[in-house]
Image (cartoon, one colour):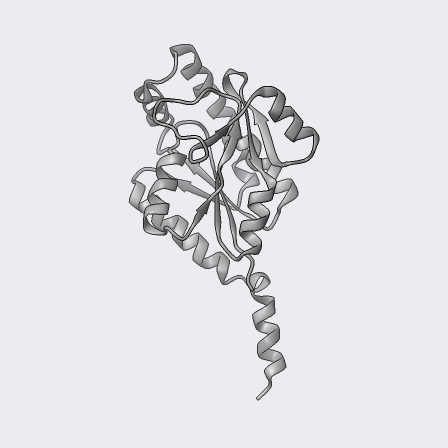
Length: 204
């Protein structure tokens, strides 16, 4: 059985990671989505176990110490976010493709431990548009918005660590490009060695 693909979609806050992943899942409901663990408070429109697993700082630190997370990071506001290792491993071994929507710190940690993943860096059409999106979300204080905006400039320097960069100007176009990436990756020789071996063994 072919192992599933780990598709890591990352980028600065406001680039539209959530929007893109939802649109991709609507077209491809067979894609699995990894649910992160976080220490921040639940927002009104969120559901435990669907959007995030919400936990205490103490429990999160226990998970770190016992190696239960594929990656983790402390980001804006001092909150922790992380990806449960067990779910990712089980999903891929079952042959299912898995989307991992995380921040840049986390994505780079995953790459160190799972190089065969597909790493996609999502960028806005312009920094002015990024600032507009951050403001229009209307869920954070102005000083935190500015903190995220300044961090985005620095985060752009990490594009070279990714396999692909996709501009999120029109959602439909960005999704189509991700679909093309996934199709191409499934055709890589390295991912089809078992099939090639079977063909060669079969002879004429």
